[in-house]
Length: 330
Ligand code: UDP
Ligand code: MG
Image (tube, rainbow, N blue to C red):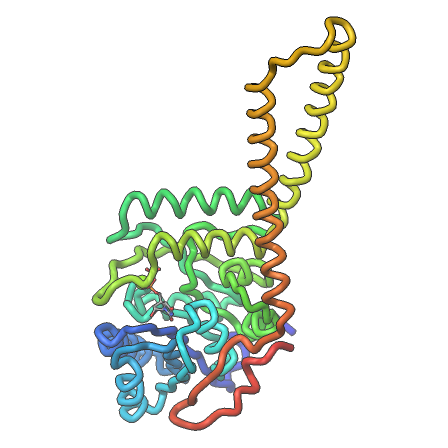
């Protein structure tokens, strides 16, 4: 098959816009207005806007229903509870029907005006067109710094190239979507998954906007957890570090043991040495606990994955009952 998608004049492509939403009642109508304005101007394509209601406690669902009534391009998927953005995204990917999909946040931090540009590069034959943040308005210096450091660490620990400053805002070709759908791990780190699947990637620059309304659902605790998720699910470097550290300590212990034996043989045994003894015991104990914890992290992951639970449950799709076959593991 040839790369370029332009020469097949006859075919009309459908593009899905996937929007995971959690308590976005204040942003959803604004999002719809601005996105509809953009896609109305793109006459050559058919569009589908798929909202995923990730167990919102506010009026998000009723706004989705209203938009679905008003505009037939709008669909909604109602999950049975809050599963988190990463799972909401795979749920949406399971249900969307487009030849390509654009994943966007509901809070307009990802400007819909970028959609035509993404589609342009898709038509040029790229499979994964991601939007790279050139600036991050409305974010604190500390958040920018932590995110920058995290990407650098992650990059050192994994073999796959992780794209820095690229969020989930991207266009994925059907091939990529199908690839992502085959990865059914329950503890998901989508950014890593998008890198891992490969295909032709293109980055375009944009200035990330502050939220239009509502609050970010992320706090530092959640971000820290996502960071650990990113490292643990794409690298076993921490385990290797444990092995190296273990070897190093064992070597040092042998040297120290030799030193003690020789000293005792030459000068006889001595009772003092309590401070060095206690510091060594504490140090070794600490290192052992740390690495037990790391091993535990991986074991926990094995435990979670081995249950083979479905990733999510759907309450309804456009108001219709669904039998939840799509959330299942392969
Ligand atoms: N989101 C979700 N489930 C969650 C948390 C967030 O679907 O449990 C959605 C949220 O509605 C928004 C997107 O994920 O559309 C990004 O969330 P947010 O704006 O809070 O994150 P930030 O932009 O601060 O990274
Ligand atoms: Mg946001």
